[in-house]
Length: 383
Image 1: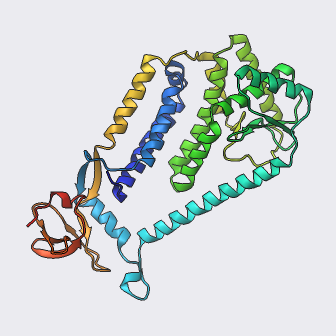
Image 2 (image 1 turned 30 degrees about the vertical axis):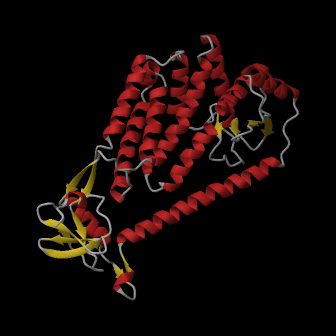
Image 3 (image 1 turned 60 degrees about the vertical axis):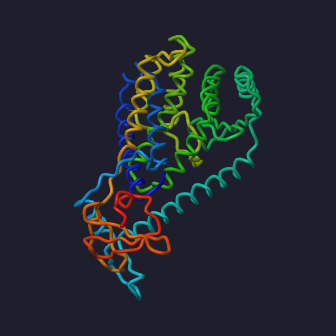
């Protein structure tokens, strides 16, 4: 197994395919109603896995591109500016790598700084002492069988309930009057996010977003994942309720939406936080309502749901069957702009005394290789 620039490109390509499938399915209420939310989650993590596991397996077949990829690589590696000597040539590929690395550093440091700033800010804010809130949260924690210490902050700076914290939850509540049952439903929603470790999921997604910040489909996946987490939380709760309680739960959410419509949040929501109202898009809110009213969460995943997950695994496995690579490779001469074809028919290797290999193409020496454990050298004859 090995990682090459071409296996990384294939990983990005297949990840984008999975993201497009997720975006298509996420918008179809009928799919989630009939097959549950689990296959959608499975597709999300399949896309993330394919992106992170960008390797070539022993069974991977190399498909050589003789025209398109060599031409593309030639345009990206052709020197644009030569600084001092030909060894310091600048090309488009080098510039893109520098921009990519700079963007990664910017997004990662921005996230770390915002996380530190947020944690310092809330550390100095005391938790609420309102008996109504403390009674409700103690009841929820006791019923869940957990022993976490939950900090509740009621603030005029937030417009939507949200929860943060990787190990100990901190729940934020807006300054709005709620009845005991309304308060319990809202706190239960945020507590369920914490139990599902959604903060860790969002952290992982944001790290990926920081690395692949230039890919618009990764940003789409991040938004869809936020919404999927809200759907999962809604369905987990509503599966335990009758229709009357579901309507009441949706009325609680509607009350928050109407109250927040004319408000402005003064507290920056951290990237790892999950909020009851994570979007202002009416289509997503309508979808949540529709799914709560029409979805029954089964105790076990139905057979069609498992079949879709199996099909996803087959596609995931198929994505490792082949990798696209150029049939030509550049010479070692700096500034040389042409590509030569390397095939078993026109090229061969000669073993040198120092255990290296010399590559000959069309009878002419091209370069020296230390190893030949990758394509296209594996299939070349040795003389």
